[in-house]
Image (cartoon, rainbow, N blue to C red; front, side, top):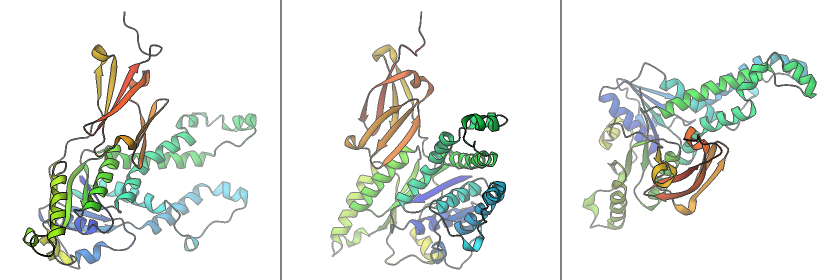
Amino acid sequence: MRTLLITGPGGSGRTTTAAATALTAAREGARTLLLGTDRTDTLGPVLGTEATPRLTVKRVDPDTDFRTDLAALQDRAASALDLLGASRLEPEETSLLPGAEELAVLRALRDAALSESYDLLVVDLPPTPRALSLLALPEELRRYLRRLLPPERQAARALRPVLGRLAGVPMPAEWLYGTAARLDLQLAAVEAVLADRDTVVRLVAEPGPAGADAVRTATLGLALRGLRTDALIATRVLPESEAAGWLAGPVAQQRKTLDEWRESYDVRPVAHLGRDPRGTDDLTALAVPGVTTRPATVDWPVTDRLADDGVLIWHLPLPGARRDELDLIRRGDEIVVTAGPFRRIVPLPSALRRCTVAGAALREDELRIRFRPDPALWPRTH
């Protein structure tokens, strides 16, 4: 199944675009699931009450998911809670904790993407800043889990009581490792969905200075995560027939932004209807494309230039990056890449782990990091 993740600046028409995309795909014959991630029903008013064949609409319910997870956690930790004399929390006295909504969205994304009942999943993600944080969450949480509860320590289950007495401190309980393992599997499944070649991001923005800045930032954040965009939907595009009237300034500004976007993106302009779209007739009039062709995969290749320059070069595509906003830190077998407001800790390819960083340069929207073999670690040739 293909997955379209749709995001853009707040107020750019993101939800409308998601609904129109799903409607178009369903009418073209694809069994389509439209997933809303807003706690309120924003898709309902946009789609209206008319049913569309082959289109199913669902909304994430973080409250129910949180209460279910909390009940399950209390069941697994029952012995520890009883030992501490702690009383259990009842569902009616609980409210969402920070992060619970994001985890509910990730779970819904995983479950929907793994369903065999649909050909296409369209996800109405939150506005761009929240969406980028959400898409980074599975990888970051898995890294935290591996550092705090290394899987290899589970091999010492039989020795845990002995080790606890020797160390004089209690060892992590079995249920804690079990919970961490289950969460790791769930997060790995979400990572697999995001890394799938059939998963792409569709950006939505209104052409203009603010929209251009938002698109540049979003593109950089997505590239750092290795995610691909299939199209840029330019919303509320004014007709060129208004170029001579009082809208001449906004029309010219939109035209300039659209011309700049077309140099780097597959831009799909969507006309301004003169009103907020409501119902399937308005969504049809927008003519938002359904499924487009698959974009090229995002690769971070390593180029071998040992014979010529004595270095290996790691190529990281970062469109929209600026030199003064880039920072690199080598830490063991990982490298910390900071690009603008985004940061990612990336494991080094195996060959580069035996090298030292010899420099870096930003050229043609690509960060090129040079690595020189470490004589103490690199295999010797005779």
